[in-house]
Image 1 (tube, helix red, strand yellow):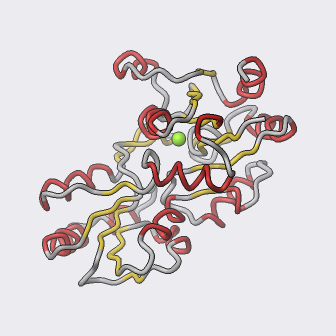
Image 2 (image 1 turned 90 degrees about the vertical axis):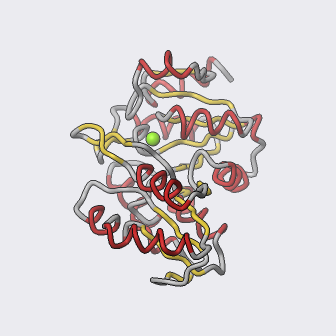
Image 3 (image 1 turned 30 degrees about the vertical axis):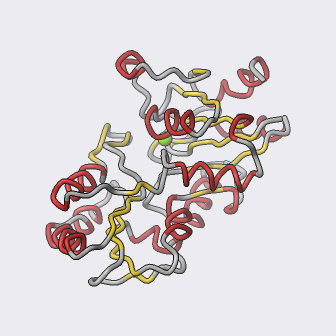
Length: 258
Ligand SMILES: [Mg+2]
């Protein structure tokens, strides 16, 4: 029996539309005795909201099986004064952080969302405030540095553009807290009490899921759903241990490739 980290967005669903066969696949993985942790780079919902959302799609998932980027931020940034440019939905997971408007120890950039809130959070006013804090010595952190993500209407610009912009103007490097950071994978494996070499990462994102997990010593399976693009496999030269058409094929694949 293995420890399996399952990505959520693009693996279990796309924009709230369940991937066909995904609910059953999770059931079969559990029935086979695998230990599962759901690892998301989602930065728009708290763990409780995400758990509710996934259960409404039919997944039998407990909140404490979910790991969000906010959980990792709360661990790493504990006790610091934070200027947070994040979607309001994730604030519940930033427990123990002092969120302030200026004189920050750290600037934290979250991901974009499909609604109008994104334009307000990443306004010129807020980005300029972040720039001034960085100039005054605050450190730059981000929940992820994704370039784009897949929605039902197509690709959308993600907050990686703002993170890269702030790195450029403040001449600094952001610390990434979500996937593919080592802190993120370490926290997930610790929760399952699993060794990296014996654990699988299953995702639709070559950079965030596959490369990140490979660097952490894990085995990887890529799904051909969500943000998967066949061309990327050729361009990047990244080779996952397995490729399945969707999570629906994962239980059979794991039986054949234990
Ligand atoms: Mg994904």
